[in-house]
Image (tube, rainbow, N blue to C red; front, side, top):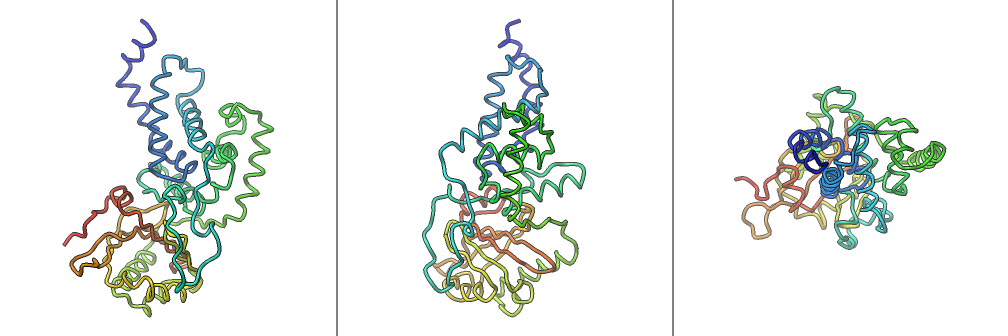
Length: 327
């Protein structure tokens, strides 16, 4: 039987084998690329390349390792010659809440959120927590500071716990080169200061309920009780970001006053953090319109970071949120 015929005969079983690795490959590609949509494209391209080359795959390595090799090459191709994705905090200092809001930068500028359901592994709770920690927005943004091959080496070794020899084989390099790359990568990430996530307990759930109630009421006194004094807020695709609760409130009662009277819908966690769909009152005076995917970071019983992702046309469907507020 010819190789192509053998591949065709094994098609249903092969497709099922590929699908078993979709979630972890999506997580890997997301950490590499910083976009859930690009990660999905990369995984699809990985499967297409693997399908076309399967008749030459002789089992010299495990199927998983082979797929990761292909996915790495796909990501490196996609990253070639382009600027890294970032967060507003990476673009410059915080701004005056009553000053210019800044330019709207292209979608490819920003780290985009991803639903936990797309990347979180099933099974061991410890594995789930570790996975959530390494898709935090701050961690993914920090990864983007690394050159692409160094980024791949760090993710494979530090996140996926591959041996240096396995990483070297995948990247077609030496163990010494991998260890050197890891040393440089760790030094770069030392300043990332990514807080370890925790499963939301009753206190955190109660805090979120208070936040939603206070935000919908636009009650600044109640919001002050749940938002930390040195909290930060950003709002991609705008360059604007704010530091300090007072500046955040000045913006909410200044340029952001259109958010008063908003409605909030909880959705699946984003990057290991609680997320909500925000619908603000329509400018026509009738009903509500999608405004932002709010992603909140919580530490020590307070909200310490608020990210308002405004690309609702793409992000709301990704997170299962309606594009119209249900009446």
